[in-house]
Amino acid sequence: ATHALRRRTPGGDVLADTPAGPPPALLAGLAFSTAGDTALLFDTREPAFLLGMAAFLGTQVSYTAGYVGLGALRGIRRRPGPALGCLAVWAAANAALAPTLERRLRLPVAGYSLALAVMGAAALGVGGKVGAGAVSFLASDLLIGVQAAGHVFPGQEVMIMAGYLFGQYLITTGWLELA
Image 1: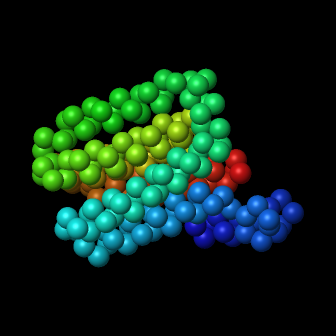
Image 2: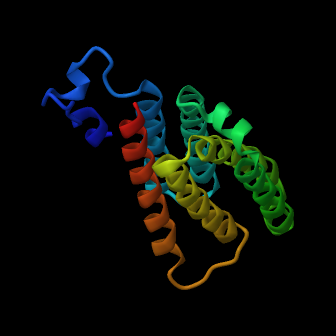
């Protein structure tokens, strides 16, 4: 968010000081991500997990709306395969992981992950860094889902954070280049 706010125009002006400023949907998504990260930092029990997931739902909705403004729907119409693949991966992951989740988490996880998959599909419609960043974000969240389903392996936390941070970086820089 700081990078987006401090980005300079080709003339050297700070983008936030220009009439257009940084894209509001990007800033909203990053703000929701910060809220989600904060919720998960302080507690790992179910209420914090659900609060974090709700905040990240705001991220997915904000990003998806912003991607539509960047031409996601045109991109999906031209090349529907990647978006359909993203939704197919969502369906397969939920079918595989849902039975291993606590029953009360299944519906919230399915709803959040659908919003995440739609965001990923929209980002793939935009393409470039935005699409690559969304894939990294999706992979990171898939690892969280695997973890929530009780499947833990060495290095998983590092992979989750690396994928998430790299994804946010690519989304932000790619979006700013297109804005």
